Image 1 (cartoon, rainbow, N blue to C red):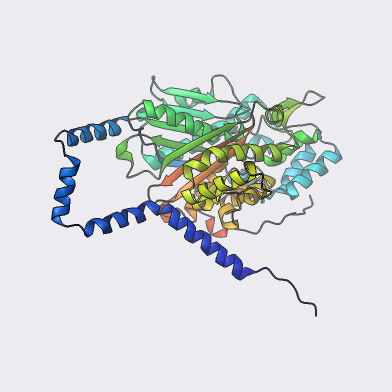
Image 2: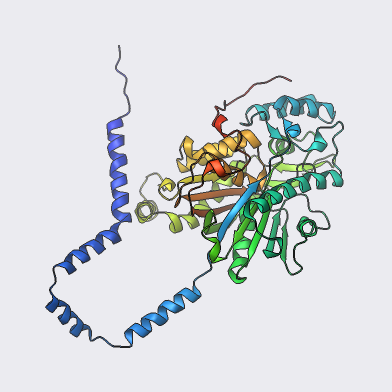
Length: 492
């Protein structure tokens, strides 16, 4: 029998541990230096210290200057932003939509050609979706209802459900909320949804309210970034953030393939998040916001046009997705990483990346670009569950493991693409699994129209106990993860 050439696993293991040793050496270089200094100081005598004091010519004003600098630092440093808690909406069981039911309802509308129905069926088979995603109540009837009242009913059920749960969790008083940020892309009625929340919960008259529209699936992090900036200048405040999308107004009843994809992908969901800058809230908050990084590629025409709310030739409206979406998302991710990397990566990874950059650009060496190991910077990854293809590319590009991508893939399987709120279903999954430990770092990465790639970095302030948590995964978390076939054939 002919010998088979197997990979050199021993060499790979040695290389892995060599890299790990290098990382620890560089990352702890300061501590090693301090230990050497302490070792040196331990060998000094009392006469040596007297000599050092005379050499430095100690001045009595030195401690005063030092105290003044310390006071200036503590006064000028930015306020810390805490995530007290968050809540994700779980629709009623009657709104569950299997793939077969989805196709049955689509066929009953009589708006789609046989070719369009077959195209949607193929999208669903490769989507990575399960059989329990949720659609609006208005689409469970024949004919489906796309009216403004139906759209408002869908959105109000989501946002009120998420907010009610959040208020019950946190116990915060309504009058304590001073900032309100709502993001939803395609449904922007008058009065606005932020005004609807103010009216429903009787928020105070001087509340700072914002309604972000048309900013796509990455708008959740934009809302976090806006609330962060507001909390920095308004002391002792709470910020309520609501992230959702409307499916009723998104549904497309035509036969343009680029606009049919969104029908198959988007599902009902939403999240409410409570941020605080009260120093007293640190002990009860779950996370501290460390960084927000926003990248906008809208200056490039292809990026600007790759996702849009448009009309087809028959004047039927819907969301159009370009074939170039994956490549454009990749470029936006690279740009976002260039800004994020220096803030979060350990010095060891930054040095390797810098050397690789010099070798390629300065010395014109033909070597592969080095992809930093973000697993050294984060314990948990929440990548927007926009679709199976997006998750596959992110996993490959960042060299993430199946465990790293599990929250995103299971969110896609169980809830589908819930737009900007998907990042919170993913974090809720990690909490329900008991994975969040005190000190853990979480990277939330969102993509959206424009084209935008946005990141939020959090640090866990406490270990999250899943036995006392209530979120959409609580009652069924033991059923996950599940195997998701590449193609899941079905008949209807």
